[in-house]
Amino acid sequence: MSYIVSSVACFARKIKPSAAAWGALILLALSGAVQAQAVMVPNFWDPKAQLERPEIPATRTIRFLVDDDFPPLHFPGLDGTPTGFSVELARAACERLGLTCTVQVRRFDTLLDTLAEKQGDVVAAAIPVTADLRRRFAVTAPYFKIPARLVTKSAPIKDLPAFSPKALQGKTIGLVEGTAHEAFAKSFMRTSVLKPYPELSAAEAELKAGAVDYVFADGLSLALWIGGEDAAGCCAFAGGPYLESRFFGEGIGFVLRDEDENLRRALDYALQQLWKEGKYAELYLRFFPVSPF
Image 1 (cartoon, helix red, strand yellow):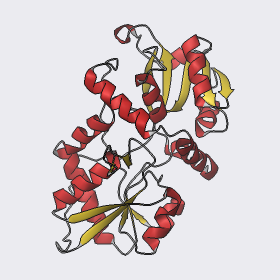
Image 2 (cartoon, helix red, strand yellow; image 1 turned 135 degrees about the vertical axis):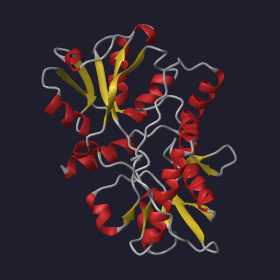
Image 3 (cartoon, one colour; image 1 turned 180 degrees about the vertical axis):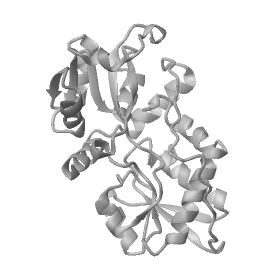
């Protein structure tokens, strides 16, 4: 299973949308050009859990590390300043804790080494949480997950029929070969006809043309496509998100050094409070005009 989890992580970065593409989607949403769909804001926190806030010296400056090449989680803003859902969530957590923070950009493949070498305090980038990561570092509870989703060609959204597992029986599902999505489909969508493609864009084009009934893939990339010009309003998500951790990982959290346990607990507390107070939803709606959930 470790191969499957790592393969979806690599796949997600391989097909990451450009900052310009995601920025255009946000502008389209603001202008009302994106076809209206209900935006579901995910909740990764147990409402019954009451986390305590540990004390962090107010004089300490927390250095967050990100890369700038994975929108909408982290990318350069119009003025070149790093922004994105993960970045703004980190800034909001610092404000909630009353701490001073900086955001420093590093190349993605150097982030964990930079953290280990104490050139930063927290990695706030889309690094999937795995057992290997936990052996090296401390990690907060996940604040985001990249779900797998099904997309189908639809009539107007209001006329889309209710989804059920039986809807997949005998249907042709396009997916990208060699990914965790293909492995999952082979295990749990056995009554369907699976049609692999070398790239997601090829599967999307076939769906738009009516050559397949569904596409099963990374919900983040599919959300961008659904709201963009290429789809032209052709398609919509069907059913809920698939979040099985054996295939799609545990999610994304803030990563810290093991000895920074107090800071990890403080960030967990801040993230839960940001959810309760509505700040998480505010940021989510800003960066995900079409929700992958």
